[in-house]
Length: 438
Image 1: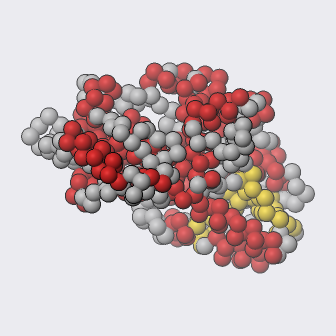
Image 2 (image 1 turned 90 degrees about the vertical axis):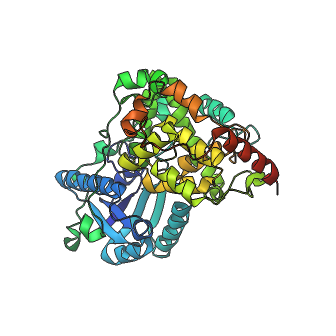
Image 3 (image 1 turned 135 degrees about the horizontal axis):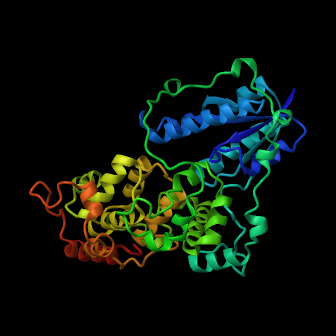
């Protein structure tokens, strides 16, 4: 039996799925596939909460596919090795998937496409996790935007909601006559234990659109870290595609333009990373690539553990360490403190967030860290330094957020600041001036 595989990656849903909808309109039955990629998993701690999140959603998809009269195939290994085996196990007509724009993903997909082509199997990838990708939003000169304001203006000018927010008919087509079950030997899927992982659950909101009331008040509540429902908390679902990005964009477009603007940043950062994959590990601005960052392992460890003596920084880092989530305002303050007051390399902060964040997304994380460090395509001016004390007074004046995550604050058990904020600021500005352009 000729079969089309649909390869799930950052789209762990059957509803409104661009690549899946296209696959289901082919003549062959479709078998959904998920690969637990050893190249990624081998770098994760054995109790990584993200793996538990992914595993649970893959299993839920498997159950849903079975109830619809089909099934879901899950394999564990290096991606090319998995596809070499699939070519032996199944008579493949095509492999469909959705695009991924990170450097490793683009190299991996090119290698998979080449392998399949050698065996006469079609490979197609579709735009799904963004509204506009790659070269779809350009300047009047046909170049990629490097200024967010201009990008956002162009993005919104060319938006056609009835087209760009239109859901794909994957759910309507997901029925027995369009599906196939895995071969007999593939009836079972690997368990967490088979993958070498332990169950580690962290709270995430349900995989559905946030309440309208939350979206409507987003612009007024988003910067108050003590509020439990001041933000949508949809970032983890956007990261793994457990909700439709089109549906969330449409909701934001209708109810709160500030939220829409924040999600446009996501498209923007993905576009930048796709055009400039080197920025995953080095400054976008060549003048900022050789800054004399401090080697200060004790200060860095204090930052990681939330014991810097700066309340809002410590609260944010402890929230991150305990929950896999950090409020956006605390992210800004914690990141600014590391790269400016401590003058420690932004890539160390980016790496730590990559290990801890449930919603870790390389393009967003890299883009925002470079913004804070003043090294990116779009960046806060290198001489802008956020003052954690001023941020505390403005966004958590009663210390509600701080006291929740730093219960010893205000007692003799809470440490003194590891750096004088003014001295740290002055040191960073001096070292940046000396290092720029070298």
